[in-house]
Image (cartoon, rainbow, N blue to C red; front, side):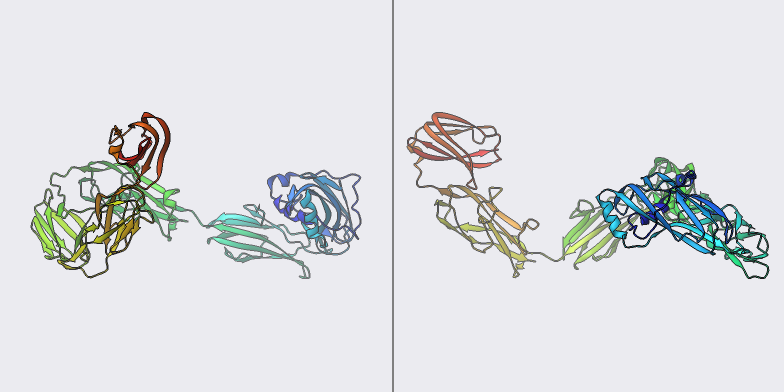
Length: 639
């Protein structure tokens, strides 16, 4: 039906000017809707009877109104006319207007007067939603559209070529074809009309390739798409006709017989098992010439697909490291990804027995400095430094060290000190040998970097106790050495004048000057830090840091002395839950963090207050207490 829907779109929006109205049949033929249900044909029937010039014929065609086309939702179609109908034929329709998905029939009858092949075109008007008018406008200037219905009228005495096949022809949307597998045969039988005197067959890709017999059997050995052709001739070859069919030949199936064997089915842990692949593959009775793909699983019962427990090699080796009994599976396919889905498989259950090796050897060692790293362990040293390696191997009767980039380069001792005089990335390898042919290897990477400066960061302030609004001048006394000599390269610094607070690194409280100055505008006690590095200080490069805790004390001279106000106490200090404040005649309590942000401000009229501090961040705070006698600032720690 889809093919018809595409072609019937053509009839939706055509102008009806200049065309006669189609007539309604007095006795319309019933719809033949079987073809629609299969989706094979857009109308019914699929094959029209032979028509000859001067010979009377009757024919009924079923058509269907689609539900949508050209972006329009179809409610109904008004049929207007058929064009390019063979001369001598008349037609009528069962109903000129049908609703979406409904059927109607067209009756053709008469005596054709002119031979030829006629592609019927239809005229109609579309009714539906707003888009229907747009669809009409899109095709309004055209002169009709093909319905996909072709009528052929032959001259009297003409030959008509036709034939049948075994296996039968299968129809699809795009073509009709005979579908076979390479190595199979197709039987062709001529069914040409009575005017045919002799025929000529052409079978590209087949054997035989040609024939003149009425019946012929052809073998196709090669996969591909071929066109079989029959040409029919009358006696003096003044009339000819041709019929064709597509021959679709798929490749013969590949028959795979999976088999394998192991060189040893009982081994010790750490020993390798060598597998030999004995799989065979045939196609059409011959050895398969294409490529085969393999998927081994060495612990098949547990479904182990971890890296190292599978292989795509044709003849792999696998080392079992844990004692147990293992099943082995081999999957074989003709495509790379087929081994995961449609592969032919063989599982040999409980095939490999692995026992603990009484003579097992394990290579291992420690180092000074020790290896580090979250994912991959490695040793990091500076150029000119030494690493001491100590074997902790078990079951070993002898050792063989290799120290790439080091001095010495080799050793057989249990403990070796190696010096690295060249920067780079090197590998240290220990091979431990045991009884028989047993051996085990451990390797580790050694990263040797260029020597880096050693910083001793120090600084001093000209004043450590100041009043609010005064400036502190900081002198940088940092020293840097490289390999015992003074470092002469670039050095980057970063000061933090409020290092005791998590927000102390915000713009305005830091400096990258060598010797810095900073003006404190809020009373409190401040920690100061200085960082030094050979590159700019950042979140990823903290450098070498020196922090002087509670280094700068900033007082507010406008505040009264604590001794002027009697019996003021803030407790407990440190506190984790509440802060108790006792003072006579309290009027206001303000709590300020070390960045100067007001955390709490509360007007009071009492001699005792309790502040809930559970929501406070762990930090140092200033408590500003205003009384009738004046203002006092206390420090309190929340932990």
